[in-house]
Amino acid sequence: MLLGCIGDDFTGSSDLGNTLTRAGMACVQYVGVPDAPAAPGVEAGIVALKSRSIPAAQAVEQSLAALAWLRAQGAQQILFKICSTFDSTDAGNIGPVAEALADALGAHPVIVCPAFPATGRTVYQGHLFVGDRLLSESGMEAHPLTPMRDPDLRRVLARQAAGAVGHLPLGTVRGDLAGALAAPGPRLRVADAVEDADLVTLGRAAAGCRLLVGGSGIALGLPGNFAGLRGAAAAWRPARGPAVALSGSCSRATLAQVAYHAARHPSRAILPEAAVAGMDVDALADWAMAQAAGGAVPLIHSSAPPDAVAAAQALFGADTVAAAVEGVFAALARALVARGVARLITAGGETSGTVVTGLGLHALEIGPEIDPGVPMIRADSGAGDLVLALKSGNFGAEDFLEKAARRMEGGA
Ligand SMILES: Nc1ncnc2c1ncn2[C@@H]1O[C@H](COP(=O)(O)OP(=O)(O)O)[C@@H](O)[C@H]1O
Ligand SMILES: O=C(O)[C@@H](O)C(=O)COP(=O)(O)O
Image (cartoon, rainbow, N blue to C red; front, side, top):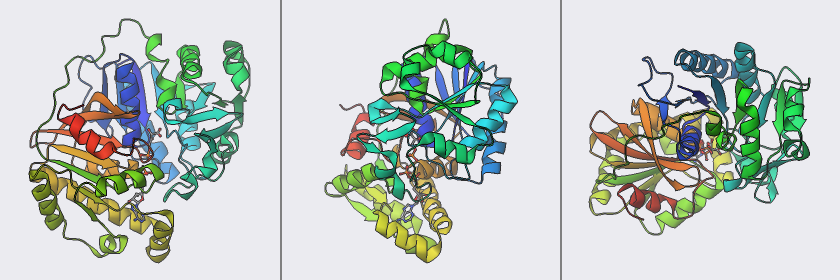
């Protein structure tokens, strides 16, 4: 293993796997810290954690365990994959995890850059934009778990980190970047990047850096630093069989996708109060499989607009609702796999993490891209091959859910 990656969620990890695979690295995504060595030939290994929204001390502990495993596999450089919208709270977890990894690796400086221009995320003057809006006006200010109300990443990170936070302005990234990286200064340095070319420049300049922190964009230039890559080995095989979509994401893009899909395919909504009270998951799974048998792509979702999310959180508490809804999706996924689902599309990072861990999957093969940042993935479910798409809340075109199902069976 050459490049070792630690993803703070599952959709984010598959987004990174997509970038690295497309850039020519043989890449595997692991579900949590594996308890066995990596198979031979893995050039980039991604340990996917569900550590974005847990207490910071636990995120640090899990990330250090992932680091130890990756180093034992020979990883020469470590990338801590965070969200392109910098999802975190003032308590962490980006700052504490980045500092703990940097301590363990003796890394200084550490570039921090969530930019992902293909999906509209750019960093300029230390501020994060989504399209032409500041992060704090992008919809992310209403995220159920990690509301992002400050677009200045230097300030956001400084509130989370023990050490000072520096800045690599765009002029420096496009100018004497090597000089700036070699100069003394704060360990964590937020880098501006507005185009893929800036990210490639950052990645190439970071060849000697032991640790990087960023979205999948920061990985664009990294494969070029390693000689003799062999890339993905096996050809991707289509998956035939029933397809079901599950969405626990309440992000803007997902809400539009759910509305589009529900107008064309059978759908059922899970209400937070029903999830908290306990649901008949088997009946829902039976319903979905019956719909899928007729060729539809049934959707089961809890996706709701910000006012409905806020009302449910006020009633039950944010953690209780999230845990209850996630619990329903994990049980539902197990029930669907037991009934022979072959294609499973999940929307939402926490939701996807719950589903993938709930299914007890181990190593995920990264396949072709469906939309920017979302690849198809293949896993052995124990009952056979399962092809998945783990869609980040804010990724994907309006027709993503039906397109993913179509692409998985080899369609255009
Ligand atoms: N209707 C709802 N009300 C409150 N919380 C919800 C609702 N639906 C889903 N959630 C929770 O909101 C969180 C959404 O996060 P996530 O799955 O990561 O989506 P995204 O990728 O859009 O951030 C999950 O913890 C989920 O269980
Ligand atoms: O970097 C990104 O935006 C994604 O890779 C990602 O991490 C998505 O997280 P969710 O929005 O929670 O799915």
